[in-house]
Image (cartoon, rainbow, N blue to C red; front, side, top):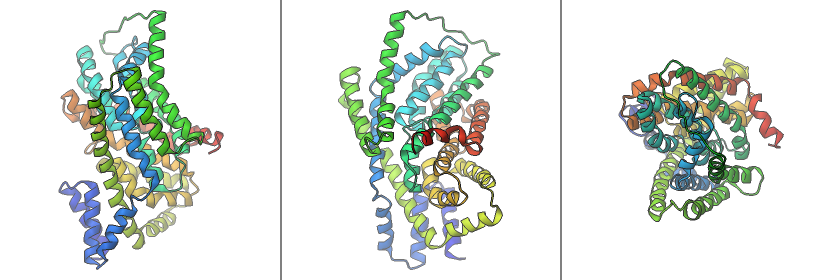
Length: 428
């Protein structure tokens, strides 16, 4: 058995016995270094090389900004605005859940954080009102996927790093239209799902001053994504600097405007940021070693040649990638999958003439669907644990929403003109 086969067998065995993906990558590559008499200092050097990129500094800043905004009373302001917009329609709490996830996801850029924060507020409230906990959990899980698509987006940062030749600003701008389409598709599905249910309708009436107060409070919350994305797109700040500006803004809002942020909240946000950043950096570091060794073995070249032998059509290539990503997403978390796959397939996509921004958004969205599909499905498990119902029931309730999201994914995959025109119109 050659080294490449041993590597893949070792990786699969580690995953099957429950070793986290990052460590499975690192251990299988370390084993190959040992078996093939590669110098171990080179292994350590490649670990560090994987992290020696200035772009990666933006990741902890983005995470910390989102955590601080979550503790600044921003979520309640988003909730009030969503109630004002859709609270009086049938199934209003479900629609509110979707809107809040779209707004909050645009602030923190993380689907799992969205599920946890929004779910802790909305799932129990929806269950008490509608007596339908699995539907509440399903809506929370599926709507949280919008978070990594509407900018600013943490997965897009990771993709831009892994691909190496994609503008982060262009990716951010390209994600706006698909993110809105996903949100609208979820709202449409909810309208049909609740049509035959005996749900009470909110009768709250708002006066003019109530509307002004809610809108004023909402603007304070919603302005952060515009500061971050606008600064990056306008060339005023780099992604790293945008993260720093976002942290300063979040601290100002939390301590001065809402006055809900405390030193205890800041400390907790710093701890969570360190933990999440460490996880991401470990994945990137081990993934870099693995990708380097696979490149030395000629795997990317072999895969590229195989694809080009099978088909010369970019449409067929995208269809094959769609199936591959969906299958990979069932078992491997989004960030790990991107670190593993993007360095191999992004250059191949360019050979097929596929726009790098198109392939980047396609990759981020397709792998994000793995967050709501078993057996990994992290968002699905978080929402089901909050609701206290089996994950199987939550997934069953999420199937209509999943189908709608697949329809949007098909548009993103095969009709990229619906979103590529926006970054191109802005000069990217």
